[in-house]
Length: 125
Image 1: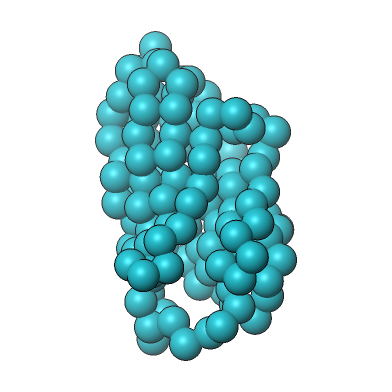
Image 2 (image 1 turned 120 degrees about the vertical axis):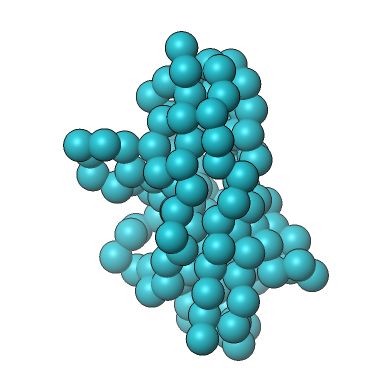
């Protein structure tokens, strides 16, 4: 059974940093992508960043480019989202998700089959 567990969320002041982790287990796939999504209260869920495990290619939403960095440690089956220069508008529940059977990093939510439970990030002004 595939499981994704997020951690690392919390409360931080604007301009601060957080690192989210997504620990994956139960994976038996050679090709997959891991994505980070977020959902703020009253808003639709949006894709933030994703990474392909096969080639290490990444993709970022325009709103986080230059501030967020996604990376993976395949030995630990963990994907990280380093978030720097956080802004109040980054406040949201952050979810990691897995899209299996692909080596392409895309942030299309509907393509992701497995989801974690989420971790809350709150940025105060």
